[in-house]
Image 1 (spheres, rainbow, N blue to C red):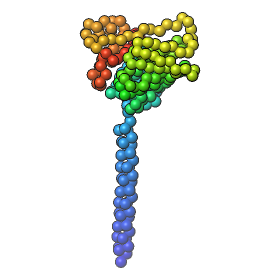
Image 2 (image 1 turned 180 degrees about the horizontal axis):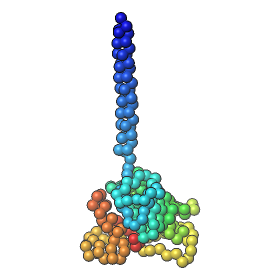
Image 3 (image 1 turned 90 degrees about the vertical axis):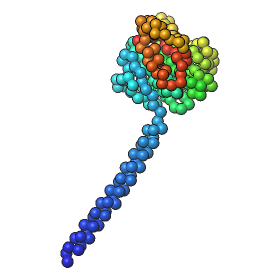
Image 4 (image 1 turned 30 degrees about the vertical axis):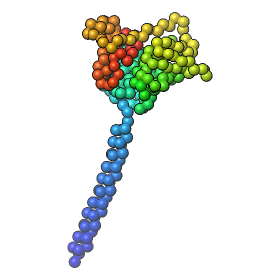
Amino acid sequence: MSSKPTSLRKALCIGLMAAVGGFYSLVTTSALAQTAGRTAGRIAGELSVTGSVTINGASAIPGATVFNDSVIRTSRNSAAIVSLGNLGRMQLGPDSEMTVRFNQATLGGNLSSGRAVVNAPAGVAITVVTANGVATSTGRQASAVTVDVTCGDTLVAATRGDASVASGGRVENVTAGKEVTVGTQATSRCTRKELLSYPASLTAATIAALMMAGVGGGVAGVMAMTQADNLSPSSIIVSGFRP
């Protein structure tokens, strides 16, 4: 007689455990699906480094993943390139710090120190913010914009395509091949290194010469990543630092 209530209780317990287990399985599956969906839609870049580079305060290694709002800092004689595939790439020279920001339509970020060179194809705009102003390129055509704050002021150079810089309520146009400086230079003794551009047909001898000149690391990184997207070597601009 007493075995029937016991059997009933066991059956009820088993049923309740199965229901609870099914509920938690459903919730977990839904949460994982939502997380996977967010991750799949998140744009990420790949980092190429020369010398000592940090990302969000941690030492960076070649091939590290870079997300929007990451803070990248290079040391002396170091450089970093963030490759974003068909969206373009951003390069930082020595002693530079930049909070990189990017989405499907815009590349750039906040440049705190040093120099950044941003390359973008047609359809992708460029926006780089400094303490002195905002450098932009509309994205109507492929663009390469250099922003340099090494000396305290802000130098904006358009190596490919046109750009503009807004500062103090004024907007100055920067046509291809020209440069504009806004702000006040911290010291008159500060000098900036020249920009280095190179043609589409880089021979092995040319690359070797560049390496001997001290820019091989940056050029090699650019050349390797050129194979990964639709930016040709002639559209890439590298700052003339010595890593």
